[in-house]
Length: 255
Image (cartoon, rainbow, N blue to C red):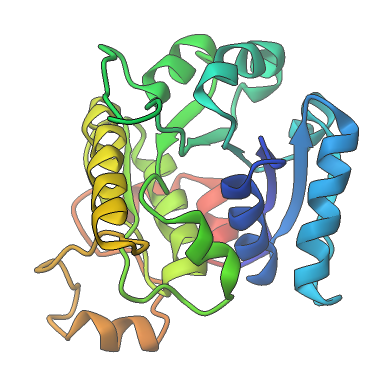
């Protein structure tokens, strides 16, 4: 896999910092973006202190962070999503934009939205390829260690097969295996809402829970064995190979 240029908007929050840390640790070029440059710089300093010189994460204002990026990750608070997306929408055209935003408030963590956060991003940035992913990875587990989360799966949804393939492959940087195709972008409503269930489980058991999907191992092996070998191959399903050969970004990922 070649190095991807990833802009993380909302990088001053723990989820954004934690994902930036994981992507940089895996060898990708990462820039943290925030509306206030000082906040981005402080977050980048925290991430770089964990990388111990193995990689360097940059910082910039959101608009500057997006420029030149292959992939943009939106990790802002839901209340800021519309403003941030609108401010950079013209720069998101032609890019893969990942939304890991969960539009849930404080206890009892109700999800009262007709449209998902990811669908709202797609509406605000119509030129972007919007993909929903990384909703259910607990930020503390991402941040505390660089070890693969080989007992977690990343569910990926979107209306672009090429976009989903790219993000499924990127998920291997965290779990050691590709993410799972969870369908169209409309399914982001269910994925985002499911986070409320995980929060409730965490509060009940005082743990950092995640999700694991059984029965979809591409070789029939035990999934943990697959994770240990860090397989980075998208399943050879109908349409996947065609999408790969028609996408410069996917060719870059698989190089």
